[in-house]
Amino acid sequence: MSAPFPFRVAVVGGGPAGLMAADVLLAAGAQVELFDAMPSVGRKFLLAGKGGLNITHAEPEAAFRSRYRERAAEVGAWLDGFGPEALRAWVHAQGIPTFVGSSGKVFPEGMKAAPLLRAWLHRLRAAGLVLHARHRWTGQLEAAQGGGWTLGFDTPQGPRASTHDAVVLALGGASWARLGSDGAWQPWLAGQGVDVAPLVPANCGFDIAWSDFLRERHAGTPLKNVRLKFTDRTGQVFDRLGEAVLGAGGLEGNLVYAASALLRDEIAACGHADIALDLLPARDEATLAAALARGRGARSMINHLKEQAGIHGVRAALLREGLDAAQWTALCADPAALAARIKALPLRLLAARPIDEAISSAGGVRFEAMDARLMLAALPGVFCAGEMIDWEAPTGGYLLTACLASGWAAGQGALDWRQGCPRAENKG
Image 1: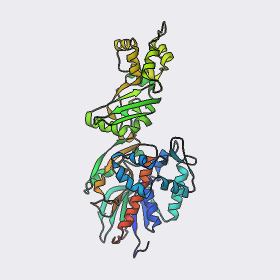
Image 2: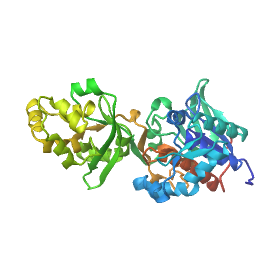
Image 3: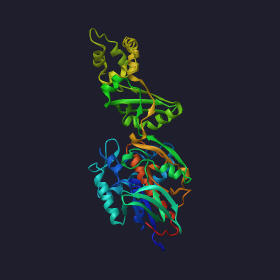
């Protein structure tokens, strides 16, 4: 990359999107300084890899892109530059093989995030990355004399200002604030004329008004091999087998996270979302009703349910949840109604769990506020990447893939824009 002067870029945020933007810029010869509020970078990345780092998914391209719902076209443009296969090749280039699990999820060998992050940071530093930890952006973003942007940071040594030709903001959403993404940037950018959608929880659990008995006896209990069915107000259907967890305040787990966007939007529109939980997906309703109709003699109803239907523990408690003694007695006397309840247990979700508990967030900088290079229309030379942009995806490798792809797009966008970019004197 030839140029009459160095191209100096500030990347604010040391998550996967920010690191990838820095990677692209450094490879093209830019001078990159990365600022992060935390003592070390990649903290949420490391947390995501705690139980096995799922980097992407090996499903067919059309299915993969559909996971981004109404933003499939926009995120698809990022994936054109850095999609799942490119991501795997990039991981291999760090010296780490990958493999595809039985579910189609893709993992690095060893399934840990730390070796990948270490190798990546070593290469970035060798390429010239200057990393400033414990530098929390204050929201100061001012046009510098002679061009470029001046940013303000709070540091252990006091306030600091630093000026650069271009800026990539990769500030994250608002989930897991203790790892660095607290959403504090929203009013700062909105105050500069950037169109920002409110941040809301994604891949989250939901509140249910459990009885004290259920909460005290079964909070934290997994519900394996259940089917969640939900039809929203527009007729869109969710019907999937998976695993949920009965939380003290409601329902969570991967099965619930997969439906969370639909459920969250339904609650926003209607005040609640009504789902049905199939507690025995492997048995059809008619066969189950016939089994429950068999005489139980002196056996208790609890033992009858366990012997004839395999319903016990948390499933038995859920079956009775919300029913008074008379209603429960009447239900137990009607095998067909009991079988119907087992196959479609009605549950009312009242609210999404707090955003800081969510795996990710939706909302943020609207696509309409940026051009195709991810540059803010209101702030030329300032680019956005990662979860701070208004898109969402389910877990399963889709979140990380899009974060990395957006960082690639923002870095490339800054390089594409640099033609004619005036030099900024760095006063940091």
